[in-house]
Length: 606
Image (tube, rainbow, N blue to C red):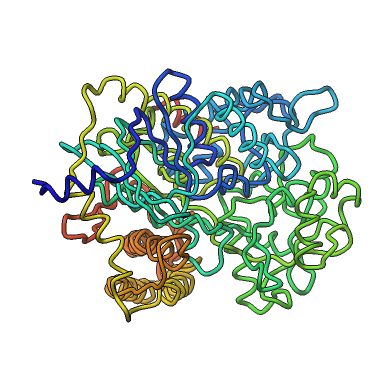
C-alpha cells in the first residue's frame, strides 16, 4: 500500500495518459504507432534519441519480400523455406509464414506512402540478391534502405499527428493486477522523471549490441526492451542466438565494427584471405551444397547471368560466413589488421559501385581513406543482431504479460537461430503493423482508467537517483568496458563451457559492483548517469545470453560451441525460455517447438 508521501510524489511527476504507448521509434515502433493511431486510439511514441535516429537507418541492403519482380518463380513458400533453413529450423514456423506472406503487401504499402525504391528497366521495384535467399528478393534504395524506411514512416507518423516524446529513456514498466499499466522514464535533457499511463504497451526498442566490445550497433542499443519486459514478468526466448555480421570495418580502430552492407556481396563482391584465395569455397556446408557454385568459374557465371539458381558461397547465410572469416583469421591467413578482404573493385565499374553503393563508397573514403572502386575493403565479423528477444504470440505479437506487445528486433521467434539479411526490415513492418492492431484491440477492450501504484513509482525513482548519493564508488564506464570485454572474449562467435562459466561469474561480479556506482554532477544531460541506467539493462541481457548459451550444448546458427561443434537433433526441437524470479535470479528452461503443419513440412522435401 503506497504511503501518502509516495502518492504525492507520483502525482507531482509529469504524467501523460495514452491508450497505446510505443517504446521505440525505429521501423517496428513507427509502423505500430501509425496503425494504432489510424485506428482511432490515443497513441504516443517514446524514443531514446531524436526522431529519425533509430538504428533502423543502419539497415542498408534492402527488405526481403517475394515481389517476383526479378525472378517470377519466387513466392512466399520459397521465402518461408529460406527463412526456416537459414534459422536452422528453430524459427517459430507461424511467424515465418506470416512474414513471408505479408511482406510484399508491406513493401507495396511503403511505396504508396512515398518510399522511393530503385527500379527495374520497366519501372517495377528492383530486387537484389542477399545471403541465404534463393532468389533476388530485396527491395532497396541503393545501400540506404533503412534510412528511406524511417523517412517514410516518420513522415507519415508526424503528418497523422502521432504524439512523439523524444530523448526520453524508459527504465521501468509498471503493472497493476498483473497487467501493464504504464512506463516510467526520464528526459535526457533535464533528468526529470516522466510517467506514461497506458492501457497497452508495444516494445520496439531494438537490440543489445552495446553489450559487446565490437559492434555495428549505435549507443541506443542496450537491450532496454528485453530487460524491461523480463523485469515486468514476461518471458524471453532464444537469447543464446546473437548474430555476428560477417562484414564490419576493422581499420582504423576508431570505426572498428561499423557495418559493411551485405549488398556489397549481393552486387558482386567477393571475400579473399590475406593470400588472395577465395576461401568461402572451402566452407560450403552440406545443407547448401546443392544450391551453391562449386568453383569460381560457376560463381562468376552466375553473377554475369542471373538465369541460374546456383549461388556463390560469398552469399551463404551470415553465421556460415562469419565463422569462415573467423577461421581464416585464426589460422593466420587474415588481412594486415585482423580481418579479410572484400573486393568489388575488380568485378564492377566505378560508376556502378558509386551508384549502387553510395554509402559504402563515402564511408570508406571518408573514414578509412580507401577508394572501394579501386581497392578492397578490410572486414571482419561484428556483433550485429539479436535473434532472441521477448517471447510473443505469432499472430498478435502479445507477450506473456497482459497488455504488453513486442515487435522487431526486441521480439523473438521469426529468425530462429540465424537471421537472413533483409528479413529484418520486412519483419519491422509486418509485425509492427500486427502489434499496432493487437495493442489497439486490447486497449479498446480495457475498461476504466489505468491506475499505477505510487509506491512502485517512488521506489523506482529513488533507485534511479541512488548513484548521486554516493561520494565514492564504482565508475560506470569501467563496468561497461569490463562487461564488453567479457562478452566479446567469452560469449562471442566461438564459445566453450569454461569461458561461459567465467562470463557468468564476471557478470555476477559486475551486477554486485553496479549497486555501488557513483556519478557526479546533476541529472541534466549527464552521460555517466545515462550509462548507469543503461547498465541495468545490459547486465540483465548479458546474463540471459550467457545462461542460454551455457544451456545449449550444441552448435546451431548464431551459437557456436567449440566443445560441442555439431548440431544435436534433441536441441533442434526446443527453444530456451528465460524467466526472472522475484529475487532477481534468471533461469533457463527448455520448451518444445510448436509443431509445423504437414503442408508446410512438405515444402522441405522439394
